[in-house]
Length: 320
Image (cartoon, rainbow, N blue to C red; front, side):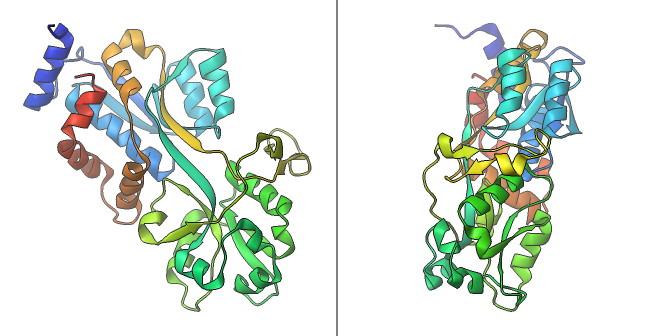
């Protein structure tokens, strides 16, 4: 069977390294760029493929999750590179399921979240379960300032996950022994890296994240996710969010997809097909995040090198 004319033309462009000839002149796509490292790197990946492989124009625009979704609905942004569910399920329900103005990629990758310790410390002190934190031994082990209470980093101020973790620490009984610490992520990891007093740390962790390339970490065991024991209300939804929330099980497995404006299917179907076909994996995004944050590499250069070494994968996303 003969390949469609578009596929043949696109293949010629990809293999010749040309940067024009597939998309109409002046084709422009606006890519939302959320603040976390994985999203930044995926945004640069999409930018690179559109400009260097498809010959279009692309722009990266910083934004938060609600702003990017609203802009995809309104037509001023075309792509959100890293949409996690169920974390962003409320946005998915509004714009994908109800309004139908946003679509999600077919491919996805998984993430996980919980509380971590360095593996060496967890083994040395016999800490395996989340419930091992609700003990006098943990109270002493994680007390870094000598005030009689241990500390547990639950995330940065303003994160939805930080609010959820505050409820979880309460409902697991941990806050009788450990104080919940809210601190900027960069500051916390700097403290973790430069501690010279031999303190032990327990902290919120999630994948994909560059910290798993820096340390051998153990994620503490929690009861399996149970929807009946997992009710999270955010402060913006109810002033009594803390009292009405209840979290007494592990977090659900997270699934990330690329989101894009449905209007692209008619405006630029080649790009819509590419976005629908993207299929990443957790280790890939973790490595990119490490290159960006720890190695301080230019994200455009990291992605260009990766694409050059993974032509077959990119071709598959392009439908070749």
